[in-house]
Structure formats: structure tokens, C-alpha cells
Image 1 (tube, one colour):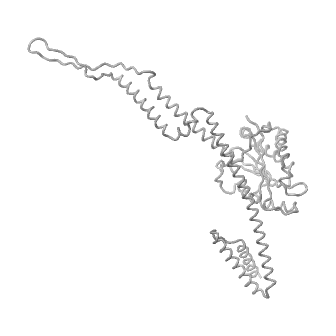
Image 2 (cartoon, rainbow, N blue to C red; image 1 turned 90 degrees about the horizontal axis):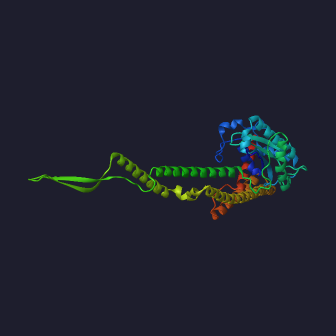
Image 3 (cartoon, rainbow, N blue to C red; image 1 turned 90 degrees about the vertical axis):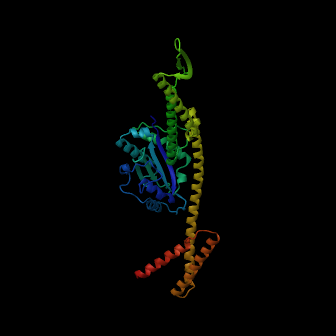
Amino acid sequence: MAQFAIIRMQKFQVSDVQGIQKHNQRQGTSKSNPDIDYSKTEQNYDLLNDQNLKYESEIKEKISEQVKRKPRANSVVLSEFMVTASPEYMNSLSAEEQKKYFEKSLEFIQERYGQKNTLYAVVHQDEATPHMHVGVIPITKDNRLSAKDIFNKQELRELQEEFPKHLQEHDFEIVRGEKGSEKKHLSSQEYKEKQDLEKEIQLLDKKIDGKKKEFIDLSEALPQGKLDVKVQKEIKTEVKQKLFGDAEVTKKETGNYVLAPKQLKELTGYVNAALAVTKDYERLQSTDLVKENKALEASNDSLHSLLMNSRDNYTKLSEENQILISSNKDLKARVADLTLEIKATYQSVKEFVKEHTKSVRDFKSVFKDFADKVKGKTSEVREKGQLEPITSEFEKIHKKEVRRERDNELSR
């Protein structure tokens, strides 16, 4: 039985936090993770919190308390550890032993990265293998937000070395994975897709084995070698009467053969079995099952080859997906920066108009005209570019500001 300690860390930006919160706290039903058994969700627990948290507000609060410099829009604000063990080992532990395993794992993480920086420790019991998600805000000892400095290559190597040692000290018969292994850690989604592919191959293999057995059973019903059927020729006897003397008796072969009932039944069975084999063979040759799995029928080596090719293709797609995710994060950061610039521009223009108008009424009139011109210009540019009409960021800010001023006037 494999007894490997498993600890994996992923970095997340503030734009990712809400999705992490929903997954960890089971807020809503996941369509992308069919392995969740919601009838067991009530067995999940958080070792650090009695109630659900709002991750984003908690993270921002802790950062504002400890970090002086304002983080960039694309900064890593959360480092999440996924802690578990080999499925066979983890499922062999009792509920109390599992809880102790997770408690000692949390103790290790907090000692290494700071108790006050640890936000949650959610244990999921409603999936195939119990596991824990531990959220750590990557704040350095000198109060900087820097996941890059904390989780460098040396630290990640030591993490894999020290984690199983810590568990061994608390009586868990656990070891680290293969040192220096070239095997790549798969994400949860990659692991699930790999399992689905292997299950599909196993199912096809069973279907092929079933058809082979059916073919063999039918073949065994046929006689081995040349079919030897002993039959008698049909002979017709004719009697021709004479006026004088004995009748003339003539025997002639009719060209037919005579079968006993037993022989007929046996021969019919052979013919029917042969027809069934021929018909099923022709059907199998014309089905996708045979066409798609001729390589699989040879041996289990061909199954392994198919799995390797699929894994390579998936790795390639995964790498392309990571590039797209990175590009998307950069775009989100750029959008956030542009939004801040638009807000600053709006306030600057507003202050400028205020300074150059004589009364509040004049100010509102001039600024409304300016806002309408911006709206019209934006619509014109989008129309020329054949873009879908939307509410611009400047217009959103203006509407929000108008509502705020109206509410202030009403409250007076």
C-alpha cells in the first residue's frame, strides 16, 4: 500500500479568491467537480473557524494591518496548501486519525509560515479522498507581501522533505514521494480527467474481452476440423407389373440424402453457430468499437500507449491554458489600473469644472454636458470599431456620483 505524504501549494491573486471561497465553503453546486458528494458535505469542517469567512475582506484587512505598501492589482494575496496522503493510506485511517493527521499538518504550516497569516484550514470529507485546504497570506517577516520571496525553489524543496518528517514524529507511517522524480504534480482537474480517461479505456477493454469470449464460445460450438456427416442417399423403388411372370422392381437414386432426426438437429446447430459467428464478426468489423480499438485488442501495451499519447496531448493543452490564464491575469491587472486612472481623471475634471464655474447650477450644467459628450464620443468610437454597445467606465462613475450626491441632498 502506497503511504505517501502529499502537500501542494498554489498561488492566487485577489481575482481568484471568490472562487476559492465558494469551492472551500461549498457555496453553491459545482458543475465542474462531479466527485463531490453533497450528502456528505455536512461532514466538512474548518480547524480554524466555526463560521464561514469572506475571504477577500479578511485578506485585505490582514494585509492593511501588516503591510505598509499598497499591493499591486496582480499581486499574489493567497497561497493555498492542499494536504492529503495516498488514497489507500488516507482511507485506511479512522475519522479521529484523519483529524489528527490534518491537525499536525496545520501545525507544521503555521510554524513555518506564521499562525497570524493562516486564514483557514478546511477539511473536505465529501470527495473520494479526504483532504485539507489551508490558506496562508504570504507576508514576510519584514512585513512585505511577497509569495515569490517566501516560496522560492529552495523552500519548496525543503517543504517536501520536512513535511513527512513532521508527520513521522507524530506516529504516522508516512514517507515523501519519489525524490528527484520527473513526475509532474497534476492539478485536481487534471487528476480527475486522467482518471476518467483510464476508466474509459478499462471499459473498452472489458467490452473487447466480452466480445472475444462470446466469439470463442460460438467457435467452440463448431466442430474442429472437417465436418464429417454420415448420411444415406435416398433411393426410390419402382415396381412394374407384368402380364406374365414376376413384377419388375427397379431402384433409382433420387439425388437427395436422408438424415435421421438426431443428425438434422446436430447439423442445424452447427449451421446456426456458424451463421452467428459470421454475422457477429461482420457487425463488429463495421462498428466503431473495433475500428477505434484495433490497437487495444493486441495487448495491454497498446492501452498504455494510448494513455501516454492522451496524457501528452493534455499536458500540451494544459500548458497553453496556463499561458492564457497568465495573459488573462495581466489583462485584469491592466483593466484595474485603467479603472483607477479613469476615476482619477473623472475627479480631476470635476474639480477643474468646479473651479471655473460661478455657481452649483452652472457647475452641474457644464459637467452634465461634458459627461454627455464623453458618452456620445465613446458610443461613436465603439460603433466605428463595430463593438457591442456597453456602459463605459466613465459613465458608470458619473451615474454613481450623481446618485451619491442626490442621496446626500435628500438626507439633509
